[in-house]
Length: 554
Image (cartoon, rainbow, N blue to C red; front, side):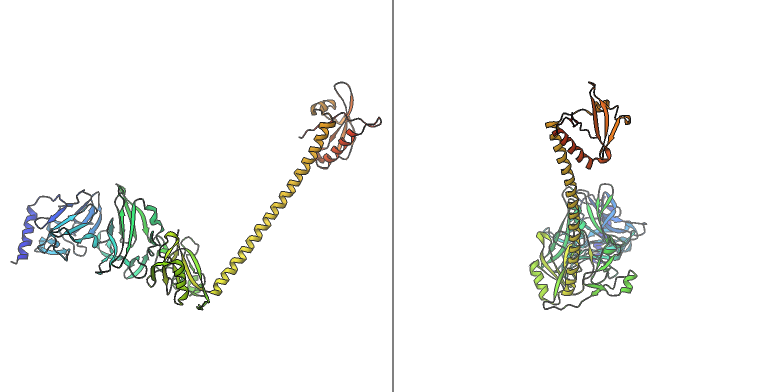
């Protein structure tokens, strides 16, 4: 029997005689398996063998201790064990972490295949399983080999020095952790962005990082109080990492078996979904084709960018916009083109774009204008009003409107820009005419009302001056009593604006009382005041003397 076989046999016997492992570490002198668990120092995560729908397939995995169903990492996705009792987890003599099947002669089911020999394996409270050498240097970690889940501190992206890729693949189904049809991977060409692939075809993309968030994920900022984000783009590495803030609950980013990315937060009893993508039909890659723009809240989902028309009107009428749009006017270059600003969008796919983070947005525009192949440009970082430069040199694919979206500057023929300017000018003129007309109407109406009020107030003021200066006043009730309530039997005459009644005052004096008619409140009031003014000033033995007047509004 070889030395390798002797070592495996020793490990198997050791497992059968050892007590349950309660520590967070494994060394070359210890092993675990069966129903034993490796627990992180704070008891947050556990490592061990588990099964899902039935007990015929067993996998080595890591899960949240408070939620055993939340398996965050699986070692032997493609090679399950058929009995938990036969599984052995140990450090081999080469320094690799291995899963052995005792029922098959200690066959290696899975190995970490570390590049350097490890002497200790430890499960940490962040859910990372780490292998370290004798100097304490990490030689392998589960965070570098995610399955369908990213935890706080784990990376999505690529090591540009070694070519190592940190990506996720979905489970085959809810009860089968073998690799499914969906992959979540960073596209490092152009301005890096995260993509979900389905059987080799792009299904969803986040849009490029804009300094605060991914361009197509505006709701990332809605849970910044729980999670902080870090995007790294250097000559050595392109990666996206999130970290749970101190005091915040555990969260995880999961690529589920349906191809959806979900941000899930543990509230102590349930997993709450804080974000999910794709969100709607506009998030499905290329829904509106090249130079199309998707609007999830519109009656018609797909439209063409300004200066473009449907490539196939017949297909668009049948709500098939995958063929996209084509220019309505060919570009002229050499000063014959300009740029139209499409506002509030998720930037198009950047796969074939060029990026210069050090350029200003103004310089970006000048560069694009001087290059006849440049079809559009935008700021690569939206902080501080927009800096950096992304230039597109071909089709603009997978553009959509989003809340708090970015500005995209699209190259158009000058005639298309002038057409837009003319339409805008006409609209501005129409709006201005309508507003001006309405304002003049209101002004005229206000002047009429003011003049009417002023004339009335002038007449009342004049009459009041007469009354206060030259004519005593009587209460209405006094005159009503003198005329028996303005009884018709006491009527002795009529004029154009009033009726005269015979009356007798309390002291026995006979009087004539003229009352203004209700139907003559405007012209009659003027004549009535003139008559009072005239009679008050004239004194003659053949004229009736004015004793006084009464002002009463009813």
